[in-house]
Length: 494
Image (tube, rainbow, N blue to C red; front, top):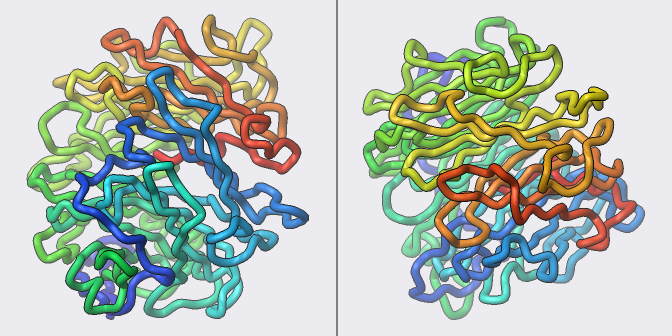
């Protein structure tokens, strides 16, 4: 069953697990290797980069979508080692169809705990036997050679249906604290999310067994709104917000049509539990355009950061985590007028359109990358050229002190700022060089439109990302997808 948990957002209750078969296609056989970190698809210790192109063209199918992967190395992202996946790739279930939007969402974990991270890919507008735009989620399994075409796909379990858009947003977390990841999947067509969990015994009893191993993802539970009404958009993220060792689930929504204006947007933090039930979620009614979770003040309770389009120029609002969950009364806001942040707020900049947490300077406190894709850049005020910022964590939390900004007009960054590049549309902070410092990747889906590009900017250690050195721009030529409406940088795995 699914439990009704918020009326729209405030009457919170428990969630009951859903039993059943695991993902169709099953997990590959696993070994006793230590689980890999997220996005380390070949288990070499370097984070790899996954790029979603949900509007990409596959053959003659516009908007079928594809995912491009480039691998990490000591020198950064290695463009000599890359691969593109579509639903026409051998071994990937389904077929590329116009408007599927394969690659609309991405999430990674070592789901089968074989020492190689796997990649979950959402295609929320895929038509299935359940109806048009019912959606699917595909798992590309990691191996010693990286992601392969051996894949698994699943439509929505439970009350599937047309227009549900299963897979609009994905996240991974360990809500049971059993060192096994759960995969969370939003279903905005019915204002809900569901999840798969990893359990060897349950997987075996449910038949989710591949020859040579008894490990796989099996159906978990689900949470839905009081009524089966759709929302315009939804997001999920995960992290230990309460500092108790259990990952918690953050679900955010935006629904301009809801009849109670105050409840049209916000997020709920559901604390993880030993039994895997999501209980006593706390709702915060606030604008959400982007979502990230990180421990910005080093107190072991991760904080929830949301990007907002208002006021002028956009802002990032941080809700500190604590043993009693988030408290809106303790929130802090950072925008382009905050002391220490270079620049001045201008209406429409989009500060916070894309955000990602990671430790750039390895001080034990998360930092936040912030995209500003519509910012004007340079003396000639290049419109919508875009830029990105790094805001640093501290004992006081995230502040503007020492904030750094990069654009395609500064020394060391390849290419140049051009109109409508939208540099900063998406950002990531992952350790691609295996030196313990998170590196910055910035997406610019408007670069050489509609091709797009991503830019790798190596962490300079305690100095942050400046001065820029070792940066690399990666375009569609690297993946052989020029002219395919790739819009590289529109969606980045983080």
